[in-house]
Image (cartoon, rainbow, N blue to C red):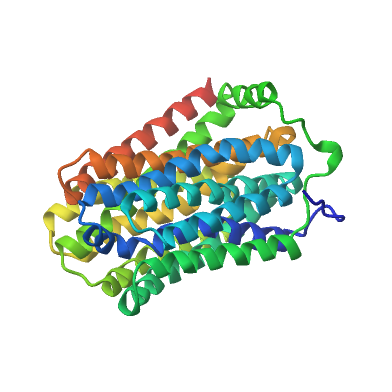
Length: 400
């Protein structure tokens, strides 16, 4: 693996490269989501099997981070990023050529494995160089860049379905992965100096993870991340089936509805960016919890009161995304703050909680309920309640 001769990057370059790396994950979800009902029809299967293509992706995404992070602590962020995004490109091509649902599952698994580098390494790159409010500001910039892809991808996916098949979507994903590889090879610099690298030994890796999971200052923020992303990916798995199959929206109309989600996340990140140097991270988390509470109540009530209204569903979705924008950079920074010596492992484990939450959210949404609408009005309020309970426990712990 090659080494970069120059160590360290500016805040802007770190944010741009980290944001584009992280954006690959949502690209593989939001570009693909309008095609889920079509894929179900093409393979003559059921909705649960279609949703499982998301679950397989999440499972690989979550587990691979536990390998990616420690490898980057040993070999550096840049070289491991290049290796993992090459794996992502291979998985995208497998998906593009998939003749059966089983091969599509395989392609999604390989994709998830490779794309895990985006979350784990972008956070480690920030932690290598920045702390405190500066880290929150950069992670907020990463989130802002991240929102561009989900804003464009559903519309692009819908256009692809108008003019071609869902297989072309995976070709587009492969092209994005190749662009990331070029960026990593030509524009990125290593952020972890050789003298700060740690041996890659199974016992050392396990000891590092044991240190993290036994530290309440890590676990509680990581749990908040996991729960908020469980809600996000729960409704991500459900909305195509509610809007397209049940309510009769076209894929393009679905993409237009999803702009509410993207606009809310962009707005939240802009507000957090403006506030991050003026208020504490705890204050940002408090705002997030209030938004999630209102969103959970909205999911419980509005879809039942107005069963044919898109707004009745997208209003609580928008509030959830606002809350996600407030909690994500603050909780990530809090979880990693005391673990700079093992930033790769800490970034990987926060990513595991985040993507693991997405895995659980999409799995429960796809398998535990008789239909998508029931899942939406039960699962999302329950997730909001659990999130508030975890936050309350954390505050009582800190007072004690």
